[in-house]
Length: 233
Image (cartoon, rainbow, N blue to C red):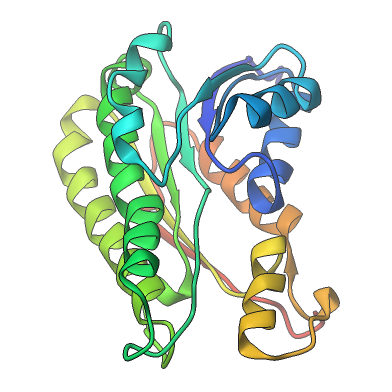
């Protein structure tokens, strides 16, 4: 069966899971709308993904997303939230700025961007994919701010799924365990541990899971899926 090109809006396409996903989508001829935090970053994404529409908005400042839906034309088949921010630390040492950034990037920005694109998603009977984290299900010591933002993202996804079912919009939360990405390398640095990418699932594996969700026939939905490093990782 021939794949019919569709339109995807993706955040976090500059590295890790988002980059792997965007490459897969571009390679099969799908239309991409990507978000960049600055004009300079937008230029880099435009060079990497020829033909993609690149919109500038800083997820750490969700107000920059207001009105961004007007820059997107026609139906949208998927909105994939991959971008994230993390800063580990004990509650007695986390700064207000650490809380603000993680809540803004990981929770508030996805909510605002989804609101902006809902008319397009309804038109396309599209799918919203929220790349969460195992920390969105269980919170460990020194992960309070990040886990709180990801627990909130789960709640947002669950509510959105119920609200948009009658509009034909599907909503999936994906909970990757530790994945070999630049963010994971930063986590290891904060934990004071050596980083060995071979211990973890690859970004391509998680991207493949997202592709499966996006390509699911219209007669089914996957509300939640967990991806963990395999025993051979």
